[in-house]
Length: 497
Ligand SMILES: Cc1ncc(COP(=O)(O)O)c(C=O)c1O
Image (cartoon, rainbow, N blue to C red; front, side, top):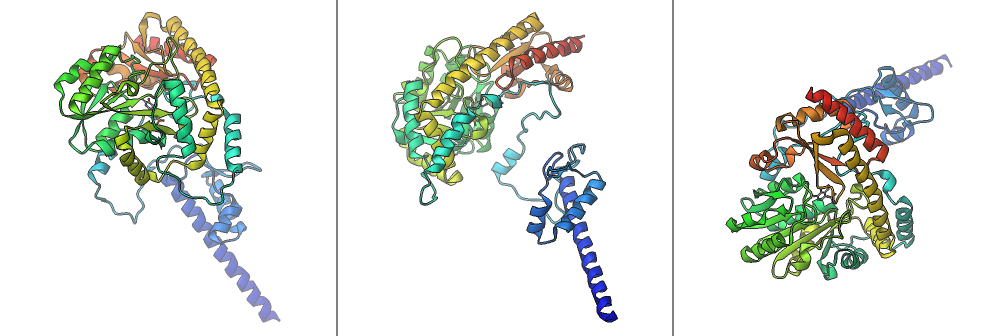
């Protein structure tokens, strides 16, 4: 009897030792992930129940590991809430720390080497009083009810099988876009010419792969949408930067360029300066494309937002004999997080773009495509666009007024007639101090972003001999816009003194 009891005690002790060992291992593994930056400050940890089930250990073992991490300050817990990585931990010292077993050298492709060296977008950390980051939208503007309604209705249709869809896009979305483009942009095309993509960005990526080989030349506006430039550079193509002014791309300069394969333009609203490509320049550009065989890539990213005149007709509608690929997106009307966009390609390019899209990711998620199709077909999309235009006109008015009142002659605003951003030239600050102004503003709680990285050539940048900002306003309400500009003005005064 005594022997049996003794054995039981030994068994219990062994089980306890094993449990402690497992708890320690879990604790070490989570610490390593936190230190490597895989788990970031504030990030959620799995629940003890889920992790125990995943690892095949008892919940007590995981709880013990979490208690140890809590005691050491790696995680924080609140009653009734999931455990999180301590938000007081700064960003990991080596977020990309290499696992000890990984090889130290990996041979990258030419593409890999090029994209590795592109600078990441500017990172702003900490809480800001006002963040004028261009591209962000207010979550409050998203038509959540309407989106939920169309998603529910798509899900309720319950197809018998879940299957891969058409690489070029769901037929109902292509049909809805075809009708929308005709109504909103006077753009007439066959349904087959529409290729649904994951945002304009994927459309640009497909254009680069399909049209350009390493060493080929492409024309791009200067300054320009930096991502477009990087995408074309990523395939090894060589940029020919042509300055843009109040009337967009200076097309007269195309005369000397006979061997470019593509030309990327934002004719309805030059990014970032805001000019509209004038009628004469449109003709020049199209004539050049006809003469040289270059393909025009027309990025119509924010044409829904014109505040002065009616919408500008796309180049695509006057292309006759020239190859024009039209690019649209819902990133400015619904949300950049949806990743939904579309190409309208010349008929001769339908097959190649469909094949390239299929290889890239098979197709854009079907549910989202069908939901967007229903939103457009029901009329809710255009109602929302009208509301969003009114709302953004109010934000724009608040920004223009605040800049004029608070900054006066110290600032010149350009490109405010359309879109969701303006360029602000800081007349009294030299270009070489642009980065310092931005750092100072960020330290003072204001997110502002430089124009210089959008320039491809220093000669084009030199034409404006002062610091410049690209200021987006679609994510802020009027009160924050005013407070942000007021604080910015104070920071600039201090900076100048
Ligand atoms: C010039 C330009 N094109 C396109 C886009 C939108 O890109 P996407 O559709 O990939 O979100 C933006 C967004 O900021 C832009 O500035």
